[in-house]
Every structure is written in structure tokens, then in C-alpha cells.
Amino acid sequence: MPLERFAGKVAILTGSTSGIGLASAKRLGLEGCKVIVSSRKEVNVQAAVKTLKDEGIEVAGIASDQGVMADRKKLIKFALDKYGQLDCVFLSAGSSPHNGSLLDVTEKEFHNAFALNVKANFQFIQECLPAFDSKRGGSILTNATAAAYESVQIVTKNILLYCVSKLCLISVTQHVARDLFNRNIRINCVAPGLIKTPFLQGGLGSGHFKKYADITGIKLGVDAASRLGEPEEIASVAAFLLSSDASYINGQILIAGGGFPLLRAF
Image (cartoon, rainbow, N blue to C red; front, side, top):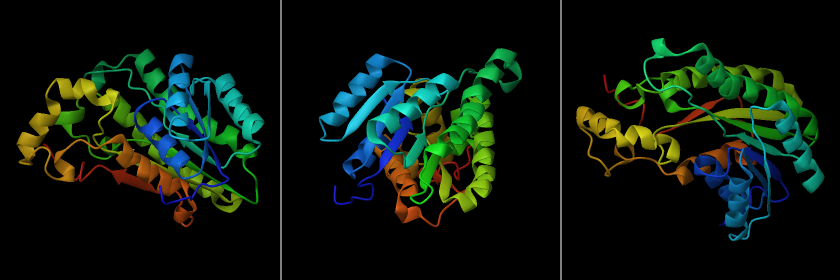
């Protein structure tokens, strides 16, 4: 990896034992960052740590549920105890507790979606601020979805609660950025399109993506907009937004979807 944008930096990544989170941890680590990976299950954390160590990356990990305040504080303390500083945070964890019509959402499902996708992200932002050095500053990245902007029914009709909660997270990111403006801390949001992760497999299995391609007339596997994205393609965007290369970017939402959701499927 020719870039060393994160040499001397320390990053926390939540939801980082698979998919976009793990790919981002690898990208930051290969650019010189010391990375802290985390997710709810210890076995997954240890597997991710081994994978990254095998790549020569300086990494540590801890089981942590982003939706639990005590776990979030434990994760921040772990990073500071291990490496003595914190420079970057990628809040990659998310939840989609309901499949089906938005009008069929239960109170519990609604609460669970907003508790993790909105509330926990907001509270983690608050909780990590004291860990940033005022001179070095810091950068934070949230993880939304391109579908929050235009709900392409063919692909996302079963996860509309998730889309609504992620649209709220986008708003939180933009408004928090105003308060962080004079604190030398940037916060941005990446909004992935259709990425080849375990989270998306349900929709693919039911043929939604193929139907979406048929309706729009695109040829599967040819151009960016006609194929699923790879986690590494979001990781490169995450690395850019967290790095000093994006030092003049704050409060922005970067859609990384190969043209999705610009191609409508109504």
C-alpha cells in the first residue's frame, strides 16, 4: 500500500469483524493506522484480529455492543489504555430489525432500529469527544445507506424501517458537524449502495437486484451501477473521509453506489 495517511494514528471501528467494517479496518491498517476492531461476539473479534494481524497490521480487538453505553465506554477506554490516544472513529454497526411493509412495524422493532442506528451513534459521538486531543483533532465517520435518499422499492422494499432510521442518522451527522466546527473535529457520513455483504444476501436471494436490473435495462456485471459493490470499495471512501486528505470536508454525505440510487426503479 503506497499511502501512509494514518501513520501514528489510532482508530476505533464498530461493527468491524465482517463486511464494510472489516474491510475498512484493513484499509486503515495497511495505511499505517493502529486499529481497534469490535463487534458483539468475542469469537468474531478474535477472528478479525487474526485476519488483520496476518496482513501485518497493528490491531487489537474487544467485544462491544455499540448499542450499550457501558460497552461503548469500555471500547474507548480500551483504545486509550492500549495506544494512549484516539484519532479516528468509524461507526459502522447497524441493525435492520424489520422486513416488510413500513406500516407493519411494531413498537419494539421501531425502538430497536432507532436505538442502534440513531441514538447509539449520537451517544458514541458525544462519548468519544473527550478522547480526542484538541491539537491533533479527530475525524468521525458514520455509516448510512444510499437507499435513504431514494427508496428503490424493488431492492429495498423490505428494509424501509432501516432506510428511515439511516436518513435520521444522516441528519444527525450534518447537524453535529456544525457543533464540531470549532473543535478541530470533522464528522462525515458514507452512504453505501448495494454492497456484497452478508446484510444484503436476503434481498439478493429473493431476486430483487436482478429485477431491479431488468427494469432499469442495465446489464449485470458490466459497469459500476450494474453490479454489487465490494466492501473494499467502501473502505477506500471511508479511509479518504477519515484521513487528512479530507481535512476541508465536514458534515458531508458521500454516496458510494456506482450510480445507485440515481437509477430509479419505479
